[in-house]
Length: 210
Image (cartoon, rainbow, N blue to C red; front, side):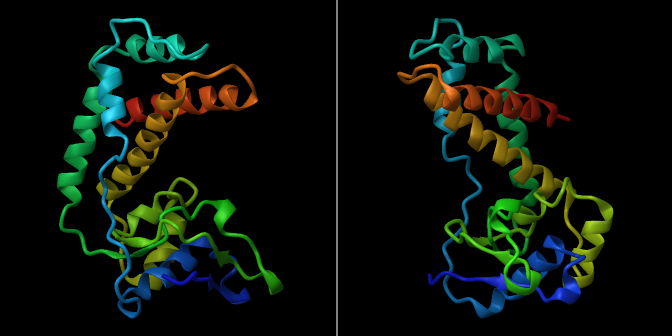
């Protein structure tokens, strides 16, 4: 699919990303054959393998054991409970009408172009999906921002779908960090940053449990 750039005029600058995403989602009928979105956590086997090895020492580098201990300290079943909760959210959202989504509309992918226009860049993750795949990233989902989105699209975000995609992001990150820590690694700026990301993702995933 050819790269796309979606912009908003200066009149919509105050609305920012909610308006921009609303305009993107409304273009769905005009885009033929985009790739299919799969809500499956791609690295789930990594998480499940880690859960099966919490009783034995992890090797790979300085963050291997701290990662095991961080999960074990929250209870042997806690990440399994998070995965089960994720599956339940998938079932609740199944059948939702898809729109064309960007996938990663974080601030780094929404720069300002000439004239102050907002641009939506980096389209590697574009796919039809529930709109909440994009919307959960809007500044924590304040009511005012969602009202802007609803005004553009006539559609109100589904809280269960917002929870689904917020949790999916953290689970995807956890699998990336676990691959790093359970493989040969050294301590350095990158792994120190990964550790911070790992603990944050783990805390948020556990906090997502009802």
